[in-house]
Length: 73
Image (cartoon, rainbow, N blue to C red; front, side, top):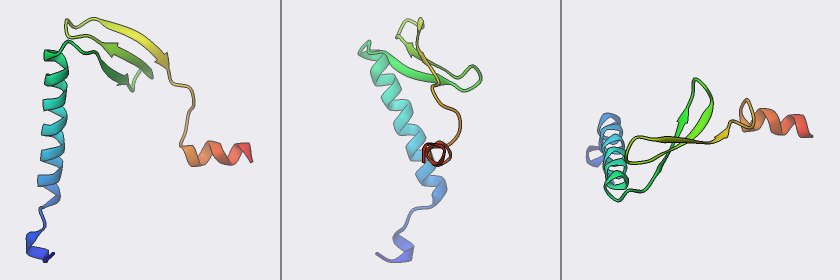
């Protein structure tokens, strides 16, 4: 593949965001709950199409995987 045939990083990001938006709309239309992570409270929610939220879980570990795997060994 030639260099001229590549798409730019901005285009990739734009397409990825649009794909996520479409998938969220699809789940809302099918009345399928979506999973949302609130980074401020570090709580995982299940959100339904009517806007109600149900707490699923709290964050279990802090830090990166590589950091806490070293602690085990």
